Structure formats: structure tokens, C-alpha cells
Picture 1 (cartoon, rainbow, N blue to C red):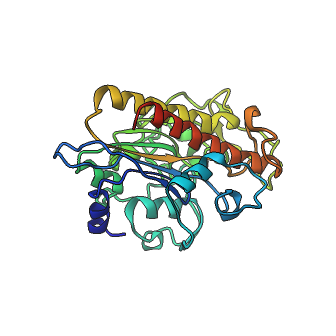
Picture 2 (picture 1 turned 60 degrees about the vertical axis):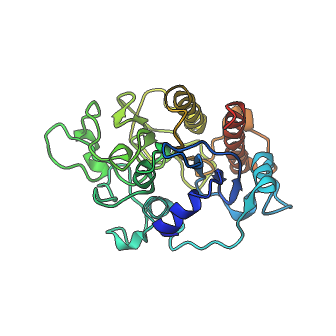
Length: 312
């Protein structure tokens, strides 16, 4: 969809909460121009299959009641195509509306220390929406490169440069430089790639002075070694993202309730390593990966319930 058609669509006043393939419609707030504009919550799951969700596959062994509810109440998409079905290209395309292979990234994905992929002069959907009065938030797995600062002033472009990074300094290029008012992210795969540290509004929430050494994944690969915040919990990554999203919504209602919002929520589940938190273990008949799909559904349910309580 090009920018003109996107603006035409949101100008119709149909609010949407979108999960992978499911959309819900409802009332929207008024913009500062007096027009009704939709609040937008875009939820991206990581490595989730078409047949994992019940609304697409009645034989799925994974309970997904919250996404099924959205499908029943809204719109379900059944014909989709991707030029690259992995992390970085998908995120680049969603944010810019542009094929990722038009950048330097012709194949594969970035790592947690890669040079930023989105150029500063490339408009993102967040920048577009801000021009129309939106408050914007990016929460979750960024995976498009950030500008780490080193202790010696030299460039940081690969994992081997990690010992030279000054994690107390802000990143110089991240979501806040590409149209987001608020961000709470990891640089790459939240549970697989270092550095294992949350970055809030461009600053690490703690210094990664420990090293990831977990090898308890039943997947083909687990968490790769690298800098880690002491006490880091792969199982708690997505629940943390959900809590940060709820906090953004509460602040928005307190300070900016007359403005529409755009939330770009990038969950880690059900990507490897398959380490579900205790409260979803055993929910599916598909083992720990299926339990992580159930975790995605739990996240969606938490957001829908929060929006309902706030009458949004």
C-alpha cells in the first residue's frame, strides 16, 4: 500500500488492532484536525506459521482464543506473499514500504551489532503518522541495527567489537531517530542474539556485564554467547514487552488522550530458543514451541483486555 492509499484508509475512521492476519474494528479518537483517526496496534510474532493459529487451521493443536476472537470480530487475510520471510527484511519492509533488497542487505538478517539499515532520510510509517498527530511507540525486537558507541571512538559493526562498546552511552541510531516517541527494544533477536539488554529510549536499562551461556533449548540452536545483563530471563522477555505496552497506553491516556496512537509491538515468541514461561507451559499439544504460540495469544489477549478496559 502506498502512502496516499494508506492515508485514505486511515482517514475512513476504521480503528484496527492487527495481529498476524487478524484485525479488529471499533471506535477511533478524534485527531487534532477534528477528523476521526484510528488507534493502531500492530503486533508482529516471530517465526509463527500460518497453521499455528486456530482461525487459520481448525486442526491446530495450539489454543489461540484471543486471536481467534479478533478474526471472528474483524478481518482475516488469506493470501499473503513475502520477498524474504525472515526478521530484518520483514521489519524493514513494514516500516518503510520498500523492498529490503534495495538496501545493502541482499539476503539474511542483521546481528545485534550491525550498522543501522534504515537511512535517516528514509521515511517510516511512524514518521508519516506523527505528521498526522499520532503518538508512536516501538516495543520489542528491533533487528534493524543501532548505532552503538565504543570506548575508543572507533566503529562497532560486528559481535567481535562487543568488548569495545560503552554500554553506558546512548545508541546514536534507533527507533527514536526514525519517528518513534517511545521505544523499548532489543537490538536483534531478543532471546537468541547478544547483547542481551533492553534499550529504552536509546539507553540501555542496565549494563551487560555477564555472559549468556544458556544451552537448555530443545530447538536446533539456543541463545548464542555474548554480553548479557545479569539475571536476564529469556522466559520473561515477551511479558516485559506487554507490560511496557500497557504502561505506554496508561501514559497516553493521562497525557495525550485527545491524540491517536500507533504501537509497533514486536514479540520474540515463538522464535527459538523454545523456553516458555511457566504460566503457559503445557497449554498446547505441540510442546514448548506450541506453548510459545500460546504465549503470543496471551500477549494479544492482554492488550485487547487493556484496550477494552480503557474504552479504546
